[in-house]
Image 1 (cartoon, rainbow, N blue to C red):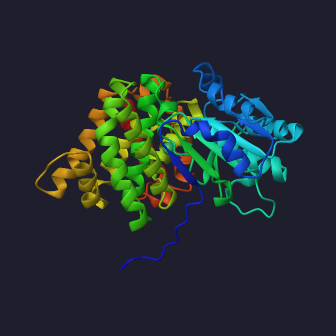
Image 2 (tube, protein in one colour; image 1 turned 60 degrees about the horizontal axis):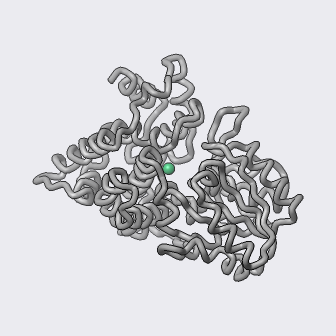
Image 3 (tube, protein in one colour; image 1 turned 90 degrees about the vertical axis):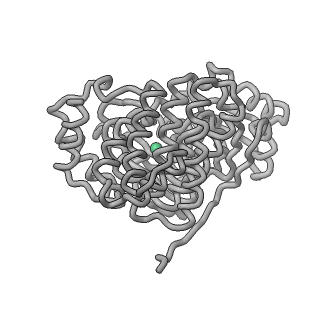
Length: 383
Ligand SMILES: [Fe+2]
C-alpha cells in the first residue's frame, strides 16, 4: 500500500555553466522592470555579483543592492530588506548567495508585498497578496533554498529559528550555475555539502517520505557521496562542483516533498543559540541521531550506505557502516566538533526544548522527547 501524496515543483531550474548570465532575460520574462538584488558582503567580496549586475546594466534594468544580510538570517534583515524593496519600488527580487540571502529574499518577498513583520508569516501560509517574484542564484551547493518553499529566519528576541513556508515563496527561477560555486572556500564547501547530505538522508528516512521524494534523495546521496570530498580537496574540480550542485538541488526537491527530521531539529536549535554554521551543526548531530533512530530505520540506513558506495552483507551491518561513514566524512572534511561552539551544560534543557518544539521533530523515524535530546547533548559534549 502506498500513502496518498501531492507533488508540486513551482521553480523552473536552469542548470549549467553560465546560467547566472541569464538574469536580465529572466527578469524581463517575468514581466518585471526594477530589481532589488539581495546578497551579502562575502558573496560581493568574492566578485560573484559583477557578472549578474553587468547583465542587468546592459539590459537597462534598474537595480539596487541590499547587502545587509547576516549568516542565519535575522528578522531585522528581512524587515530592512522589505523596506528597501518598497522604497526602491522593486517588482522583483534577485537573490545571489547561499541559504542566507535566498531565505531572506523569500521572507522579504511576502513582507514587502503584504506588510507586517517576518514572524507574522511563521508556519505554512497562503496569502491573497502575491509575494514579489524571486530569481535565485545559488553560490553554495547545500541549502537548495533556490527551489524549496521554505525560509528559516531567526527571531532575534526569542533566539529561535522559525520557518516561513509556502509554495508561493518558491523562487520563480533558479539559475543553478556551477561556476558560481567554484570560489567557495574549503570550510564552506564542507558545511554546505554536509547540509545537502543531511537533507537527502533525512528526506529518505523520515516518516513522510514518498516515492517522489525517495527517487531524488537516492540520486542526491550517490552524487554527494561521490563528489563532496573531491570538491573539498580541489575547489577547481568543475565536475565535482557540478555533481555537488546537482546533488544539492535533488536533495532540495526530496526534502520539499518529504521533510527533514531530528538532525535539523537539533542543528537549528544549536544554530539559533550559538549562531553557529548550519552545516556544521548538522554534521555534529547526524551520527548521534542516526544511532538513536537505528532500530526504527535499519533497511533505509542500509540503502544510505549503498548510495555512499559501501558494501555489506546484512542490513544491520550496512546501517552501522552508514553511521561510521558520515563520521569519517566529517573527519575528512575537517568539520568542527561541538566543543568549538562553547555549548554549555546549563543550556541543554533549552536546546532540547527548542529541538522538540521544531515542527519536523514528529517526522523522525523514532520520535525524540526532550529528555532524549538532553541525553544526546550530554553524549556529544563528553566525547
Ligand atoms: Fe539544512
